[in-house]
Image (tube, rainbow, N blue to C red; front, top):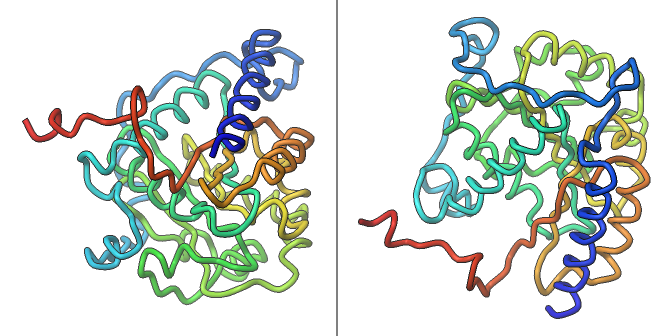
Length: 285
């Protein structure tokens, strides 16, 4: 744990140094200027393509068994609510929309974190968020949330079915693109111009404030390397007692070559104390 904490602190120091040198780091506009912070929308319009999406059918048992703790507000949802708020703040400050969620290796809880973020955002109704399962070799999001779908994101990206027909709506303001099974040639699909154009179409149609992509582990395949250049930033999920310092260093170096690292989340941590604790009495009083 000491070496893991050192790696995380090192990443924080590097990120802080980069921000001191360029406090509005992020993608440049076409005229070469830095984007201004995006204004928070006051209220979302009703109807439109969002209202026509099929709602997600959830099972309380499924949520409990798969540790989807952010489905309801309360003490257990606080870590993901805080993560949601910090992500949204950074995105607005830097005018980011597309954010990748990655991990160094498998079994870091990346997809669980992505699903919990979807629930956290669904409780912030003035923000529209799209979550896509782009871990095309080993998709887990549909099974985790107990969803049976007829198609996969591969079918959407290849134009065989529209995103509006395929996606499921969580609450009024979150929609999710699930997968039925593994895709053929996922690396080529993620790197293709066809995928880029399809995502542009989805963005234009649904106008989300944020698009989150649950991506494959960094050290497992080359699937991410062509796609991460298209996102504005990436969130790295690491697991206590699983992710090594070497894994984190390699993942950070690879991410830094492709996009902006917006932060590191330490997952599966048994010890919570000091400033990182959450006061359950506040919620129970």
